[in-house]
Structures are given as C-alpha cells and as structure tokens.
Length: 218
Image (cartoon, rainbow, N blue to C red; front, side, top):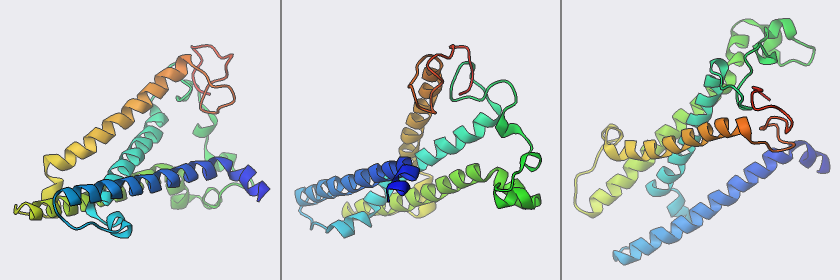
C-alpha cells in the first residue's frame, strides 16, 4: 500500500478531491432542490432521486464538458502553437515529443510503437482523441440532463416541452455551455502567461526558478 501511494499519490489525491467535491455538490444541491420544492408546495425527493434528476445531471456534465474541451484544445494547440517564455509552451527548437517514435522505440515502448501502421497513428494522437471523446460524451449528457430539467419546469408551469434537438438549439443550452467554456480558456491563458514570469519550485508545471523569463518550455 505504501508503494502504491508513493507511485500514484498525485492521481489518488486528485481523484479523492474530485470525489469529495462531487459528494459535496450532490448533498448541497439535494438540500437546495428540496428547499425549492417545499417553497412551491411540491414533494421532496431522496438523494438517489436527486442525483438521477435532470438538474443534477445537467449541472455535473456541463462542468465536466468544459474541462475536457479546454484540455483537449490545449493539448492539440500546444503541438503547433508557441508562447515565448512560457513554461506551458514547447520551445522553438525540436523536442523529444517531436521525434519519430519508430526510430526512438525501446524494448519497453508501448505496443503500438512496435506494431506501427494504423495502431501507431491512432496511438500517436490517443490523448487528444480520448479528451475530445470525453467532451462529446459530457456534451451529450449535459443536453440530456438539461432537456429533462427544462421539461420538468415547463410541465410544472403548464408550458410546452421541448425535444432534445429543440433544447440544444435554445439560447439556454448555449448560455450554459459558453459560461463554462470561457472560464476554462481564461484560466489556461492566465497560466500560460503567468508561467513566463512566476515560478513554483519543484513543480513540473513551472520553469526552474533560476530560468530566465525568455526561456521557453520546461
């Protein structure tokens, strides 16, 4: 167990914090939802009913979608875009990640590197594919949760409901998406620029403390 935690400490802590915050979101959201139900003279729901409701699904996945979208874009853009002096940018000279994987393969290289062909081409872009795949899944779940919540409120007020495509064409859906996307891209842009001038000793997300502001890459 000690070795496992030593080798996987970063992911264990990050997933642990995620789970803690997700449970906190569900409990506080459940309380808020039931409070609204009571104010409108409607019946309350159990926690399990709340976490499968349109409101919770929409709130969860509209945030996840923005995270995966910005990460996918950032991974892809850093292939060919640069920011002079930033620790989040590649340098202007060729780097290890630009080398031909077949020429650099080792005995313990991943299987697709040894197989070559289509397997290698897909594996060479697998991180971006996975991130955009997760974004697409969360985008769809956001829409499904959103239309469920929208129709629940519409029925409660005697208004017409919408289908999935109708909701996805609404300003409400795109307002929810854009308000999250803009914050994600702002945070990445701020990190890219701040890493030119600021440091965090010991972090691989920072340039060395002694590095000049002009030095690009980590």
